[in-house]
Length: 231
Image 1 (cartoon, rainbow, N blue to C red):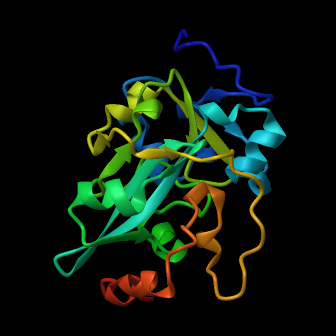
Image 2 (image 1 turned 180 degrees about the vertical axis):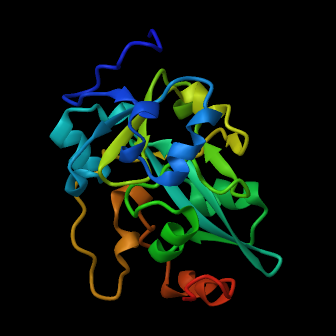
Image 3 (image 1 turned 45 degrees about the horizontal axis):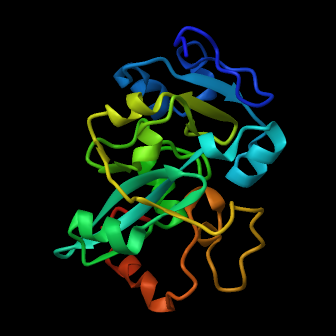
């Protein structure tokens, strides 16, 4: 595909992201220059930002969409954040491969408030582009090999389309074989969370929490650095 030609993905109108910084979160707009190829942006209804609703509403194939999952890794008495970018048809192997790769004792999905505050992006729109430079960004090989992959823009009101190779070339990115594990069926609209479950446990754009995990899985929250959750 000619990088100067707007992509044809679904019913959306794509324009050069560099020309529409107002559609992007500030960290994402600032990071565009780090890409080795042009990125494209399209405005969407913020209520349709979650993957299943987005692909259905705009006719963008699920196979070209990717989810950015923010995780908290507990290691040597410290909790660090990382991001995983996997095809929307898969789930990130957080408790297996990611934990081993990061050398962590425990890895859990980051709480919504922490991920939003630390990334500077909106819940449901977090992008692998523009994350803090200290975060490892793990990318599935299928995402890295894609001609174009649709990802978050840092806001719920738009989506980015970026060549997979350009994402793989970002400084913090590590391409990790087997990161995305196939699921039996594509993500669907997610039901309301049962009582006692945080909303971020169920949002498709963040990945689903395995049902077999007990309430003790959230113990790492007690070890969050003091500035997390402070005013």
